[in-house]
Length: 452
Image 1 (cartoon, rainbow, N blue to C red):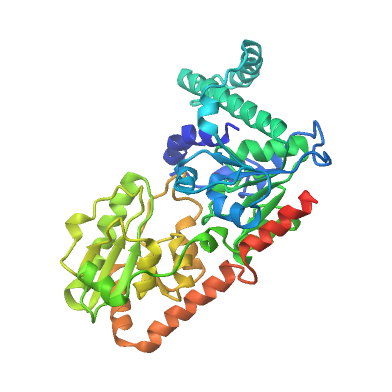
Image 2: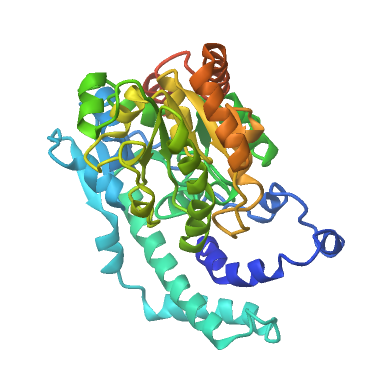
């Protein structure tokens, strides 16, 4: 339960030590790959088997899954948990059936009390571990002790709240979209304790940090690429199902504007090829450096080719783009313009490693994979994560200004090259997403096996 917070504490030290040759560390430790730690994390033993309790029939899921719930379980008892803004937004202006219940987890957790006896018991257990490492630069520090005791208390509150929810509301099946954060980690472990199914549903592109350690009963992934990826992480193949993307299924992909209306709204010349750049949420220093590197690439094209580069920023992207805007050649998308509206009218999609690349292929768009140098970051850039689209040969791979200009010139000049990029994108789509049946059908079939 303290795993993610622990990572945030140690990350500055890890980043400092990245200057050491990795080979010199291999002989010192038993962990040589990302799947090795899985064997060190053991789930709790079953304390009480609730799976065969005939009175249990409720389904618990994040409110972000509301569209799925209403489509497949309109008359079934459903508990919708609210733990972030995405959950809150999913409930806006939505009418819920009487058999649905919403629970604001953060508020309940904040108001939960842990007995002095329990706090003392677990604080003593943590102290015993810390006392063995008094001379360690992190674990022996006073600040670490204070932080870890605070994290311990929060973890205890989360477990208590979620355990009471499971027991009180006759929950039979739990769906989640997170395995390491709140509330996914605790729910996946509690399901082990009570022998209830926890079905994890992939919602974004993944990194090791967003999946490990993992305790789900079933893993519903987008497609074959992720099935193989999770098998390589040490997750049992029999627990992994390819179902496609529930998130993409729930989105409305129909455009509201014509291409002419779209161009007029953004003042884009009718003859220009529209290439959308999907930004990402890097840490502030990394983001600023990446933007400083790639914006001159864009400027070189804007001067000479009939191309408009449309920058679609992520809500949490704090990088400053306005200084690079050039009339109708490099423009910022207004926040009010929906992503799927933009993808529909774009000719190509540029990104470093965003999920938007997969979404663009659903619109039959070609992909340009930008690969500027990105500094190591413990959470945001490690293990080659930002190379995954390049490794998959998702489209044109661009590493510098010269190659970028040459790529743009070929896009303008050659129909065959444009068609080739679209073909690469479709290959990525077929490998990344199971399109054999609607994801909601496949996930509900799995859920129903436990509701019988």
